[in-house]
Image 1 (tube, one colour):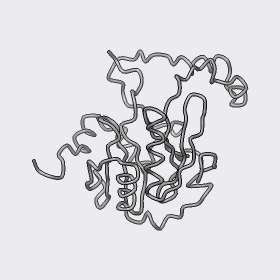
Image 2 (cartoon, helix red, strand yellow):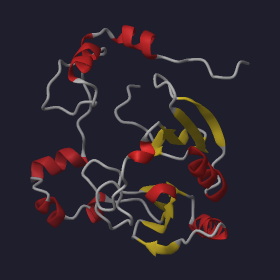
Image 3 (tube, helix red, strand yellow):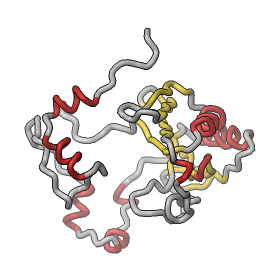
Image 4 (cartoon, helix red, strand yellow):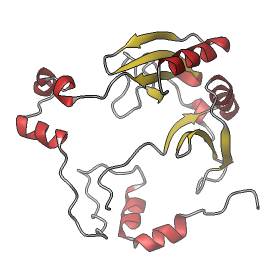
Length: 228
């Protein structure tokens, strides 16, 4: 069966100027076990950590030299609350999942037991959440599903209109068309009108022009840092 959409989150990565502080918070306050800490692949001197959320999903922390010199500005780099503003394209907040209300209260109690304030629960119809902060200005949430999200009840026609989304566009969003292309699909040529990774332009053009097999061979790191 061909894959038509991702089936979950493999990992979320945040940038840090203090790996130890973030790992202490996410292992002790949040309870995620540390499962990986190694030099970031292709980035000499970079640190990359992985913490397990479940069997197939991870929370990741990246530390690079000089990050502490980049200013954090509320309303630009960080939202500060679930209702706060930040720059377009920046993660506004991260919401973790628990199975039920008992799990939500247990997480609230765990977070508070470490001296971190946690606000809630607050109901949102299809979910209920608590809100709290993490190190270095992170805005965090834990939620559980109260019910399935029914688009007939939760896609507001007024919001579609406010977003400039036509009826036809809304239908396409509610029912994404299947991918009918035959694999492999050739790499598109560089087009500045399309979203692009922020490599230097000539480097990016060279990457896009290279065969997929060459990129895989050159860029892959398949062995763990600790020998079996």
